[in-house]
Length: 554
Image (tube, rainbow, N blue to C red; front, side, top):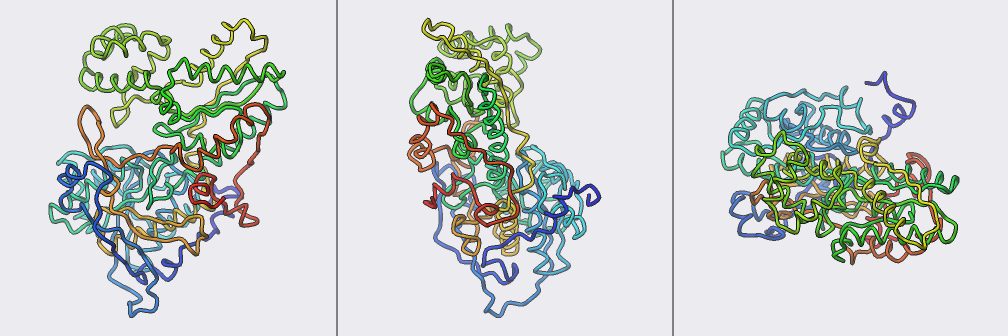
């Protein structure tokens, strides 16, 4: 690995991530303070019935206990780690934090990385991560040290296989690094382990570039900061090109299926002419035709001022938030879940005809009104959670086509509309983490080692006060059940961590809403440039606009 490092990679390998004060003296020198009993965000009785052993656990906070009579070394800890779901910058630093945390307890502690995600845990495929291997991956992007996967652990046979593997390795803890579904999986697995009397506990770390895993105790999910900075650099480059050529509209779809946090943060960083926020579209009950009219109006107004160019940001999951299209997608997911074999192998037209008999008349009308290409994309195989694969729907092309049609229908439109489409997603998922993500991820992993050492089953690692300076960051753990509600998945009710959507009364959206009319008419573009790793702290250690606005730091 080291032979393949770039000049930047070699320099980044030497970076030592910073830790909150509570963790700076080693994982053994941490005092754990437990608060009052907790409950889930909703559906309390149902969640409690599903998690009788772990429900109601208290929020835990960590403080330095360097003045106590703690020993400098303890019994070696044996920990397994799983990377679950899509990649996010900083995952390797989470593992590095776990590694260093358990090594601070005893040099004989061992870290096992399960290969390929949860399936590696289930099937007992693993490697032992030693110091040499860990050092080769510090401060790097990607999940390639052990790879990731999307296997769902949900059957008794799978759970029993995991217990067997944990027993064979004599594991004290398994740490699952993932998003809302992966951490829900961690809670389910931990509950099962406890019910079966297993000595191994299960805890999690909050990962997703989408930014929709956050709450009072999880201020941001790791990877969001780096990913959006990466996208914003690219958007800024396109803005410079658009303003140079002044002949193209660029429609850029941004990753983020269930929420518009990426689009909103990118807009705050770059000031595009148009940025659609899915949550606002839903709140205003805008139909697809109204969304198209809104975009066309801005294009037309700029054209009247001789500006036949611009930049528009489109959230990946937009179509699901447009009321009539969203209902259609939900009904499609439900129908296909129950009739999958009946539509397998059929042409798009034949699928549409059959499916129209299983959904409401209103949704059937919407489905029939869509272009054949979009219909085909809606019929693709579901994702691992039973949902339409929204990332495969070319929403940006649909909007371009419909805006073009709308403008041609306007007799008073005399401008030109030449549009180019882009999709930024995978470009940001494995970027080298920003200093913020490098520090945050390392801290999350180190805090997870404290959770493991204190047998805190069903907890998620938590680092708070992220705008206060690292010396003031607060470390602790949050019971995963506290974040849960019940959602409909695969045609059945399932416990899941509640997703955090863009709050329309929140400071980030309000700031955006106060400036977007000016941005629409002008070229107020900002050009963030590449992520900076060295220089003044306000440049290289800065976090993102979203968290600063949410926490009143700007």
